[in-house]
Length: 98
Image (tube, rainbow, N blue to C red):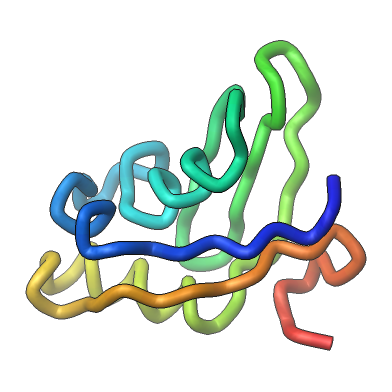
């Protein structure tokens, strides 16, 4: 897996489900960024991706921008957050930019 830039849009935010790791706006945006993605689960500390159905999960530490977004979205709803972009980089699984 190469580095992937993920953009969470207003449409993802509108379609997202609070407190649902597979249907939060970040998970929806990751699915859009990885065509054919098997599954995604996102919480404030971890991003899990199964690139293709049946493959093993790949885990990343959630970058600070994702963690803050998840907390705000889950606690206060879609009105509390806005679009943003982050990068998933397999060479930086701790989630912090290089």
